[in-house]
Image (cartoon, rainbow, N blue to C red; front, side, top):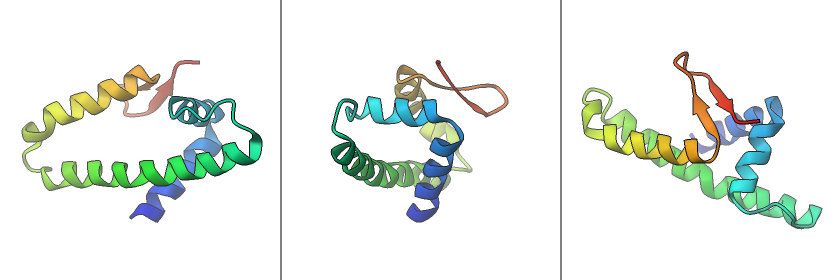
Length: 97
């Protein structure tokens, strides 16, 4: 699953450079040297993917009773919103540019 998520993040970053930039800026990589930034970016992504995997697992386990994870989803949405990631009513991501 983590390989699938890593590939999904890399595809998202490839499709929209602003998402990539915002992701890594929020993880405080901006300003590092290019070799250091590359290593740091890889490390950050490898730390973030397991967290996303756990979050997805939590939601999937409660798929038949989403009310039990509603507050958790609100918190995750708020954290992402604060970092400029917004989901429209059509379930597509948008970013502040």
